[in-house]
Length: 367
Ligand SMILES: *Cc1c(COP(=O)(O)O)cnc(C)c1O
Image (cartoon, rainbow, N blue to C red; front, side, top):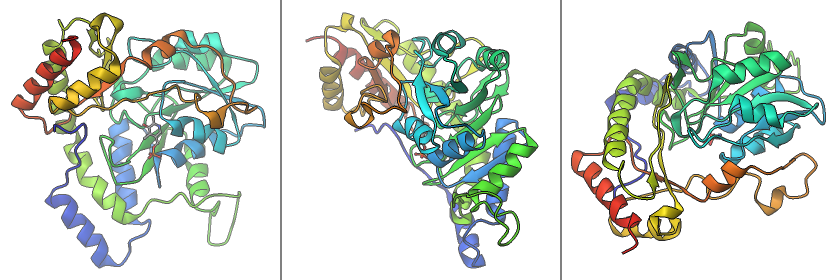
């Protein structure tokens, strides 16, 4: 079976982890700082603040914007559950805007249509590796005086006209095991704002500025040097990883361009897609249901994933909560039934790619 994700480490990670182990300093220390500096450079910002996972990076980013009870964070309904859970954990109210079928992301137009007089923060999710239209969204935020938190968990190094995901507002990244860059568990907040960066560093460390000087009721959101040691060498290899994913994506898109009923993903003008996922849509024209399609793909040896099977709020536990305000989202409601992610990772061989293309073409035809 061709897997949908791979995790691979080399001698550089092994050597650095061993160095940290032997140093005896395994908690947050110089390696975390080194990872932060390298990551700030990758995103193109002044500050990167490492935390223990991508969900806490979202929580901290929202918290530092000082919302009041009832204030709303406007996000995408088509995302991983962490996006919603982070809003709720930060004590804010979640509202949603529809997505575009071009990039699966919210846009300035859909956000604008969903604004209320309690909206304080726009929280686009850069899904599958492609940054949302942050130029448009930043313009809306400036016009309406709103904060921006970019859920960039899947889009390390994606750009719009050269400007990095996570550099338009407060950026939030994940280093979970399946992401393009990983430390097993880990996260990062990015910003150009000196004051917010300083407050975030205090917030992640129990609210402590100097020893036993507590400025705010904070958290323990610290990353460890052991984890940073796993991440640092990957940043050095990251451009090569993205280049391989881009080549694979181009080959898959060309090979699948004329399969009836299958819509392939696109990199939009001015955007750099880092292909965390290659997500096709199985439309009604194909003559098979998505479930039949995925089962067939499995028979042909091609791993697949459905990210995500339902809209994020569409679970019993989120019903009838005052802090989850739901409307109707025609595009997201259609797309959520059609998406299937297929392998695009850097370890695919030429024959793997042909197996995937042939598998999709056969699975999409009813017989
Ligand atoms: C992975 C992910 C997160 C959360 O990251 P964790 O490190 O797993 O906590 C948040 N948002 C999106 C869109 C993600 O894909």
